[in-house]
Length: 55
Image (cartoon, rainbow, N blue to C red):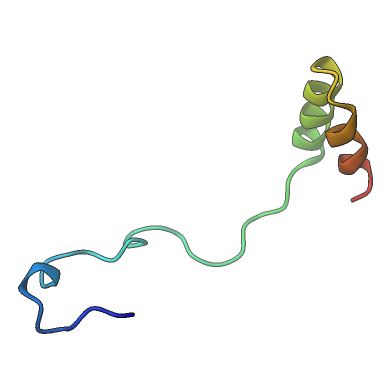
């Protein structure tokens, strides 16, 4: 369901993504991947750690 362009409350509302970067994001760096794995090991989240090695 969309809003009518005649609705006065919608006249001055900015788009939800105005000023934000759109498109694909950069991939994680190797340093970020190892930081995630270290955190999961430290917290003993075995299931999440196992899922992170599948990718």
